[in-house]
Each structure stands twice: as structure tokens, then as C-alpha cells.
Image (cartoon, helix red, strand yellow):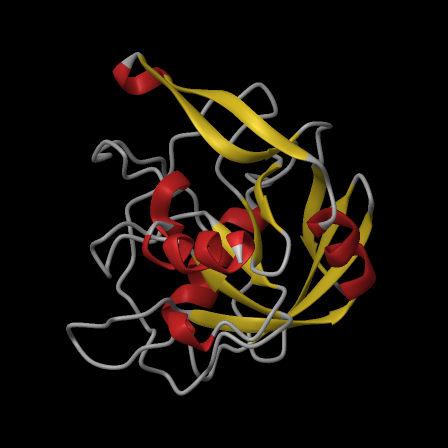
Length: 212
């Protein structure tokens, strides 16, 4: 089936919008306000409703700290879900609605070998071909994408660091969005390109915050 073929190909290009089309060297200084991360729940308030994600700091401490740094800095606010593939993933955390890429902090080490699997409803980090290149972009699995799991050094997989505990209906509403080609722009390099699977109508992350 066309969808299955596209899904298989996408396993190898999940990093497409991770900011590594061109290597990024720039970083910004942001420090998290939250120090206690065990069992932390982050609310992604989107234009289609709220998604609550429980983070697993025990299995993915570096990734959770990194994600909370962005959350507590208000960094995700106003960004969009820029990659939507029904039956595979929804992805966000990197682009403004107009397609401008937002410069990130330095990349983090991969924690894909943590025993967590890319099953339906889990949240994981997008990255480039380098396993240690994840920055801000995340994706939520909308299927059991176990082909994305860590196997060995030659098959490094993608780091899962939490799961959706509320709002999976919102995730699926996002997943059903009509998509098309969209122009993206990397201001740091004055680079413009065209990407696929971008929602025709903007789906925004209005706010991302730690639930009290």
C-alpha cells in the first residue's frame, strides 16, 4: 500500500525537520525552573485541544531535563505541528507557522537504549542521522512504531521519554489533518526549502507548561 511504503521510508527520514538538513552550531542559554522531574506532567495546549504527557525521568533523565528546559522557557509557545502522517506520527517543536525554523540549544546524547518502546501514544525525540543530535523537536507515535526502537549501535533508534496520559483524541484529530507541501526557512543560513506532510491549516502549540 502507498501509505505503508511512505511509512517505511519515513522511518529513515524522521529527522527531516530536526534541524539537521544543515548542521546547527548556534545555541541559546536557557535553564529549567523545574528540578524535580519524576512523574512530571507537561500540558501541550494546542489549537485543537490539550494533550497531557507524563515524562519518564527515570528512564530518560537527560532527555526529560532538556524537554523541560524548553517548556519552562516558553520556547514551544506559538510553534506548530509541522509534520503529520496518519498511521505514523505527529511532529512539532521546531517551526513557526510561516515555516521559519527556530534556532535551538545544543543537541543532547541519545537515551534510546533505555528499554522504552515507540508504541502508540508515546512521545520521543526527532533527530538527524547522528543519534546524539536531538534538540527540541519531538513526535508522538500514533501507531506501534517499534521499528524506531534501539537495536544496536548500527540501529540506534529514537529516544522515547514519556507517554500521553490524556488527550489522545486530540492527537488523533491532529493526525487526521489535511497536509500539503510547505516552504521552510532557516534564517541562520538563509536557506529555503520545501517539505511534505505540513498541515494545510495551522495547528499551533499555544502553550506548553508543567502541570501543577
